[in-house]
Image (spheres, one colour):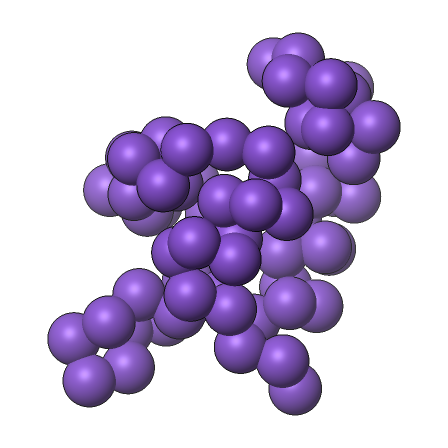
Length: 65
């Protein structure tokens, strides 16, 4: 199991760290809190992207919403 921090999740999703934190606040993205730090499980993020209607990883990489 690969754990990502906010920076790694932001890089993968081609978003800012602030945008990732906003998704967490809205509980729109799967996350865990480990010792007070936000962590993301790689497979959960990839599944979340794949399950998002009308959104592909390629769209995210191009910065489309």
